[in-house]
Length: 377
Image: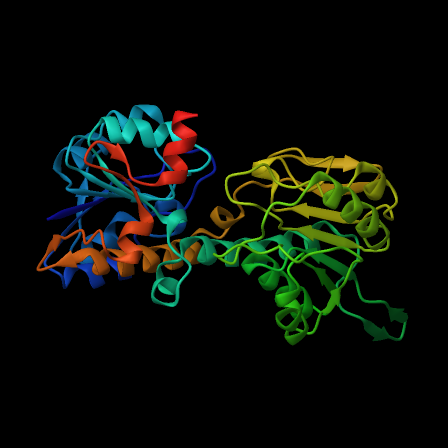
């Protein structure tokens, strides 16, 4: 069986689906690994690294698609790339199932069996396959580094002969994987950190990282779904949340927002007035920029100066640290592939919770109920 690794084509994407070390792990399963030329170059993995561990380099995407049984990728394919797929092929990647349901329809119509890494069930057995968590870890770390770069102050308190420098005050909104990594990184840089989440259950995690957990006067009884993700709330809830958070935003040097609800527009948590109340030079890093943003003035892939406050709307922070992001993502893919493999071939046990959960399309149909409903709606 031939496993193909494509070169990503989306603007700004520097990650690669498999790193050379991952190729070595799969080679032990009697697989042939085909890597498109320069697929790993932007992440620091030239073709020679892949050749040294036994991979074959494909001259271009056409050759790769023609020869491969399984296609591995980071980002979902563009329309032209979908057309290169053939009936019976397997596709595994971050396929944006709830945001691009028509892509699922295209894949089904072409007879492709596709697995969306975003659909991986959040169970203990699947933790090492959880690509959303691995990439969010990188994004949370990168968000703090960006904030530290744009803030015209240093993060730690310093006592010097020239006087005492007060530590930066950082507010993290959303204490999921990205938020917790942001908290830990900001604390390591010496900032005073507080964090807010609608899910009271994360309070202990926040405090274990040395941050103060912010508690608002809101009813958060149904804030978490069965998968552990934040649940969408009513507009009245968000209105009250914005009002109460605004005071804390105003006195922060840095605000990092990470609130996302799968398949939905990001909830609005920070009004323009709250940004205007921040001190000039302050920074907002909005990790939800790709889904409309948690902040009212966020613009995707732009840095907005709003009344002297820098609002950063980067939409693919994981790709800005491509080597380690690729290493973690490759581990997710390798573990998932090994889960599917039996004697060097993919065997789909549709009774298995992991296989069934991640399956997007199979035998000409959309296999996921939620995605199918969106595609048909």
